[in-house]
Length: 416
Image (cartoon, rainbow, N blue to C red; front, side):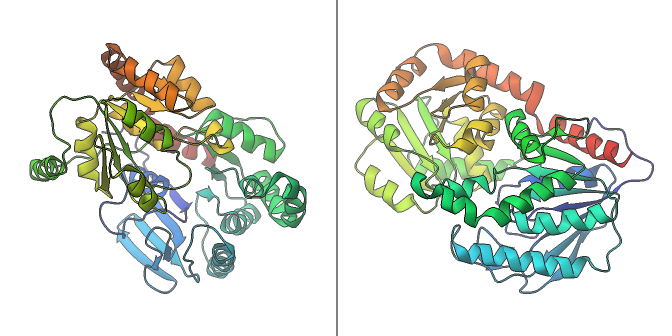
């Protein structure tokens, strides 16, 4: 049950989030902010219009091939805006797609009746700009949900010597970003450091309109048959329920992660490592690990398989590179680990590293040598203590009910 007061007359809320899974997509995709907030709002009697792109960022396919409206349930309406699509996560094609998406969104907004309050995902910057300005002109309270340091991240793709020229070329994006931040009623982000970054963009101090909402997600309920099937599948892959020390990773295999220290630690220790997921770095990682006996590559796994894998793991791996964005945030993998009572072994720095150390919910490392030392520690008596701390911290601060109850109440306060 939700620890929220029920409103006699529910709010009418718009959510703008593109590049995320939707209710109408294939089963097994991890719900992100759009789905989680929509579900929480509908469960509490509010009416939601979820604006998104017709182009599915994950499958790289169009959902319907046109701008359309889908009445998913009595209180949830999904509005899909058409755009050209793209084949790669990065590149001009994606920028062109977002520009067209914003243009088509602007056309669709012309004859709309405004909501009571709006929750706007940022980035993409183009759609956030169109929606924020439309709502601003109609004096509708808006909460801007900032999850990436955009357009700053674009500069980091350029060599240091070229960053000044790149910044000049990107001046329009920086201008648009400041316009969005200044015209939003409140700013929302995943951690306090990320919110501070957002406030700096808005050139103001924090107020009662601003909010921190971690990217936690609800725990799924699986039936016995699905769990049994997942257990058999993992048994066949060599990931058995045998009580051995085992570290696991579940996620997209991309350039944000550095698996080399894990490969080297696997060679030097007897600890088992399980890597589950797919992505642009998957083939390279398979080639680097296929002869290492204590590394198991599972490929993409579904949510129930991931749940059973967590139950058969001793700790969770988060081998993140030292990127500026990561220093301000806490990856959603951390919340998954805490929810399952798993210690976190990570190379992350910044806010998340401090959280791990201060709350004693895991151990950090910087290279393969320090990772081997971490593994030796984990093979001692620290597991139980860190596991207990991890689960308690989740229940106290990061459970889905706690985070989204506060977020919904914050949206209600904005309407007041």
